[in-house]
Image (cartoon, helix red, strand yellow):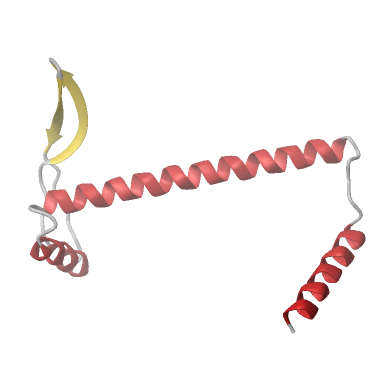
Length: 112
């Protein structure tokens, strides 16, 4: 297992520049992850294992933000649907599915 140290955990302003606050963090990696980190270092794209880990954490943070935004959007759509249903603004399910079947049949006929 490979320890990784000196991971940026935050930033704070110092005069006109932003100076990273660094803390030491010991991370235990599986042999597969250690191999991956070493391969990234060997590629020359990263200088240290910490850079590889920071990039991975940034990507994880971005993925979680994207997931949270998508979930919030889905919840908003559900809320709008419930509000529409409460007002009686509903569509007949059979009519909607029949329209979808007809649209699908027209597309299949066009593609032949």
